Length: 375
Image (cartoon, rainbow, N blue to C red; front, side, top):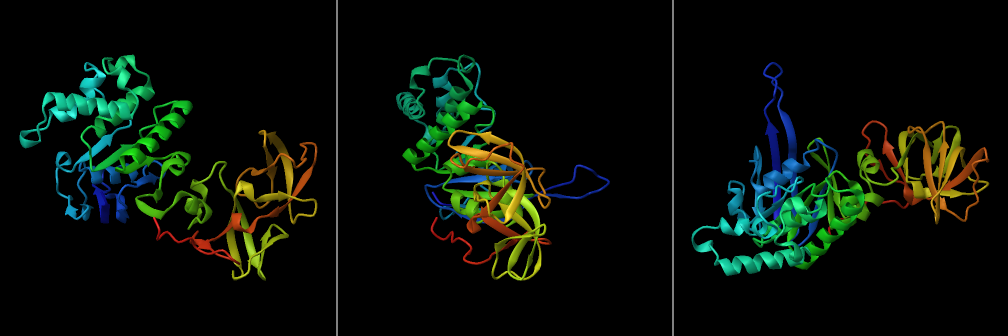
């Protein structure tokens, strides 16, 4: 089911009667979610991602704009009439019901012609439970389940109605690290098997990038960038997106362009043809650093962290905005914490320039914006 958002805006009235300033939670969001894709809405707390999800579900009404499921305008349609499955962060299971009863509950609420015979409801419940691999737990109560199992029950309950659209609101945030990894892999498997168009809300960029076909990065209610996860990582449109995506996070420097060369401090570290002379912010991914004794970028070593196949070099540079510069290099490079300095060459495609005033991306050399037409 294709989901289309047209100029979607949500404005909340001010909580303070004296100031009277409205809060724009989502501002003019336009995007078509392709049929059968998993889309991650990603951003920090307060960016509007959950509000967007609740407008798609019908739990919140847009201040303006339209929502379409296929060719059907569902903007004013009640949540129960939209054909959505919704999974909340806190599971929202009924503690006095068994797993089977929890999963069957949405089917038992169907009325009139939609009402199903009991044997069909039970069959549907077991099919949904089997899909999320909890079919052996059907007679247990939620209190007898682990957090990961409870989340699977919530997903099965959302799937049992065979929804047109599946909506997941930070479904993994209550799980420990191991369960998060396992459950996000299960969500991706389930989505692929069912082919249900899915919207997944999270503030965890690693989570969104690992399972989404498309990510939508938001800030203060405004969409910053939409694209395939790897393309957004490789081609951030502004400094916010560059800083938000990536683990370890991108290194940010204050620099300047003069005569087609990029300067960090007093050193010319990279040729940047096509960029006029100006002050810039410079984003350098941790994997952009190539240790070489004659490298143009010199950093003062603070620590060397051995991580097996890789080594994390923690250093300082006068132009760095962050307290430390973190470089991920191959363990074959013999860098010692006893060394005072390390010198690097930089991979040009892992170096991003941003205008100092607007923080928008400046392209140089062979860099060019990635196309997101094929999604």
